[in-house]
Length: 273
Image (tube, rainbow, N blue to C red; front, top):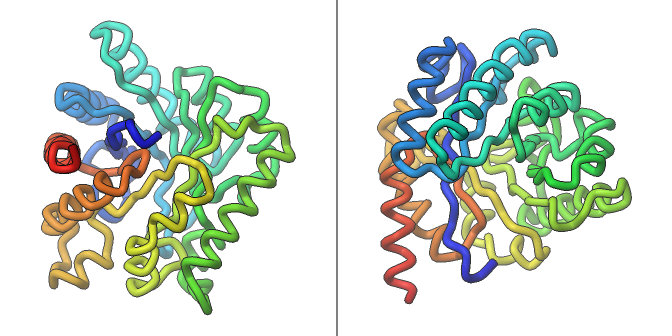
């Protein structure tokens, strides 16, 4: 893992209410166009999400989630096949039914913000699909309640221990360790102070031995630091974090933009040679 350059996972939210880009790519044409743009900028992974997980968001039905994401995944799969791009397709979902349909449509990464806690069938599904990678994020509850659960005595130790517990549970369910990727869940049941403490101690989470995905793109804690209410105005701060995370050799960063982050990673790699 040390020799691998940090990957860029591009966010493609097909939702009307996501915090940074809700509604921008909600129909199939705009989603297809955005996927094309990201592919042209050499994105490594496109992460398709149909359910907002912003603080306070209400859950949608399984049928609505499937209707939003599966046509988009099929379009991206056709794009990959037609243009012979190296793009990997990821599905951002907490539901095993949606994950299964996404795998059938062409996804090879399941990005589960609940780490399997929201659906007890998820681990068995991942174990039954050994070619699929699984991102298990640190999670304490659904969007409507998660900020009330942001209580820690030692946030780094507790997040590390809870992630290790999730990984152990996945292994017991038959998931291959090579399938597992962990995510500290920046902004999920975390205050701004918790987020910064985790980012300062990423190396302690890496000691768990699994690749790390880190998603900080345009999040509120960055806005609080730079004094911006607009998610779009937080992009430069996000790029600064991508540069630092690339120096720390995290597996991937999850971002709304692509090219600027690819460039930042190239710079970090060159400086680290």
